[in-house]
Each structure stands twice: as structure tokens, then as C-alpha cells.
Length: 434
Image 1 (cartoon, rainbow, N blue to C red):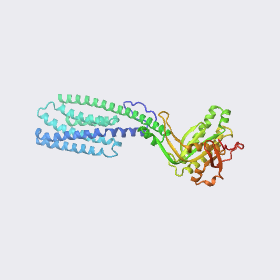
Image 2: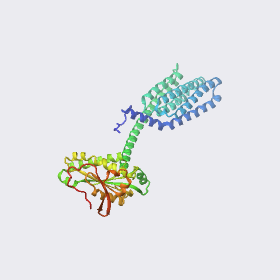
Image 3: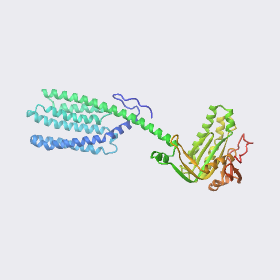
Image 4: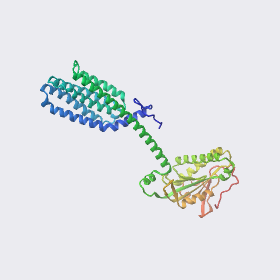
């Protein structure tokens, strides 16, 4: 996410998508406030309706009942609209509803002012000013983040206030009422700016935290399977058993000799090219990368990632990796680059051990046998165990089995296949007893 500047007084996000996302987020958070205010407003309007017959004449009571009844309808409709999914995307709804409430409150205040003033109520301007400022406070918060819209609403409200109540009046009540109203409106405008700026600042911080959290999540899930991450967070032990997995062990042939001939930077570039290519192949073949050890690459089919027939997925992955040998030779600048792949199928145990630099690893004889088979593979070829050969549907790609003695394992039937002529390695033979 691009870094956002700190908001100014009339700040707006340069990116329209960010601005729209901010408005939706802010208005969603203000929804309970809008509904609460409307509920309080409706309760106050009902209180006026109940009290008016005892305080004003019959004619004024009828007029007040009409304005207050319409106010109740507008406020009730306003609450209903807030439950519409599209409400948060249309701030003009707030503007229109608040304008209607301002006009109706202004007309009700006019009736009260006219009635009480004719009866000697010289302080009635205080009631009308308070009524308007209460509504203005609501508008200041509801329209926060959109100061120009609030300015437009203030201007319309001012016309309603002055035009409805104080037309053709020049008494002291008018002067005090105007002073009270404009000073209160100025304060409400400052509140609108303050709430808007702080909400935008909070949104910037929240977006930054969300982006950082997302990067951390991606990093964690890049190292650990999602299921393992959740168990670690819950404080549980991460230990799994897989009855039918295929382990793939890939090693770069002649790496030790190559390391003596090229610079360290060149060597790192070569390894990076090899590992990046293998990573891309895991995504294509539904195979899970386990780890890299020096110039070796360990992967598994049938572990945390569902791969169907694990033997077929493992062999397809091995073929795809070996297909990138030409690119490795180009990066190295020499022909003496090749790969050997060993694959064995069987049960494995997977899990996370330790509390620092955690990684999901696999253990068992299946992993050890795959490593030994890699030494028995031809250059740019694959060596598979009988267990893998019996599982795969690509048996025709492998020749007749050979009985080999693998170090630490003993005799084993090994099937081999050369994927590509091993140019530059014509004299290098498979290591039968590593």
C-alpha cells in the first residue's frame, strides 16, 4: 500500500479507491451513532407532542403536531435507510435527511417562538438556538471527513434559522440569538474538521497496520502450512502423520567443483535461479517445498498439499525441474551443471519442532531413502524406488530395475530414467553406493 500523507484541514486521499474505502469504513463505524441520535430525536419529538397540548393553544398545537409528526417520519425513514447495504456509499443521504430535519425543526421553532414571544417569553431565543445547535452537532459528526458537504449544510441551516424565526425582527433577542447561533456553528465546524482529520489519521494507521499484518501473514504462511500456523497460535503441538507421501530429493551435480571456479556472487545467483525455478514448479505440480540444504532441494507430494496420486505428482515435478537445466547452465556460464533426483514413496511424519526459526519439516525412512536414491540417479535423471514405481502410472518411462546397495539402507530395487542428455557429464556415472 502506498504511503499516505498526514491529513490536512481539507485533506482528501489522492487515490479514489482509498477515498471510497475510507468513506465506507468511517460511515460504517458511525452507523450506531446515527441510529442512536435519530432514536433520541424521535423520543424528544414525542415528548414535545405530549407536552404541547398543555402548554400552547389549540391552533399552535396543531401546527406543531404537523411539523413534529413529519420530523418523526423523516427520522424513522432515516433509521430505515441506514439498514440498506448501499447507505454507507452515499453520504448525500445524510445531507438530505439532515436538511429536512433542519427545516422541520426550524418551522417548529418558529411556531414556538411566535407563540411564546407574543406572550412575553423574551428568552425564547435560547430554546430555538439550542434546538438548532443540537441538530448541528449531529450533522458535524455525521458529515465528518466531508467538510465541504458540512459547510453546505450549515449554510442551508443558517438560512432556515434566520429566515424562519427572525425575519423582520430587530430586537435584542435577535442579536443574542444570532451571536449564540454563529458562535455555536463555528464550534461545530471545528468539531467537524477535528473528527474528520482524526478519523482519516486513524484510517491511515489502520490501513498501515492491516498491510503490515498481511505481509507478516504471508511471510508466516510462506514458512509454515496454514493449519500448522493456527495450531501454533493455539499453543498446540504440531505433529502429523502421512501414510502415502512421495518425497523428492534434488541435488546439483558438480556443485563443489563449480564453487571453486566461480565467484561467490555468481554462485549465489546460480543457486537462486535453481531454487526459484523449483519453487515455481511446486506451484504448477501441486507439490510442497520442504526446505533447501546447501545445493539440495527437498519437496514432498501428498503432505500438507493435496496432490492426488503422490507418485505421479512427484515425477511430474522432477521432470519440470530438470527441464530448467539449460537455464541453469546459462546462468552459470558453463556446461558443467546438472541435476539428480531421487523419489521414494511411503509414510512420513511432519511437524514443527522448537520455538525459534520454526519450520515445518518431515522425518522418517522415506525421507532418508529419497536422499540415497538421489545419489543413484543418472545426471539430469530420476531414480525411483519400487514403492514409487508401483504407485505411478508413468512406469513405461523407466527402464528395467537394478538392484543397488544404498548406504545405511541396504539392497533396493531402483528404477531410473534420464530426462535429458547430460552434456558435459558423459563420464559421470551414478553413485551406486553412496
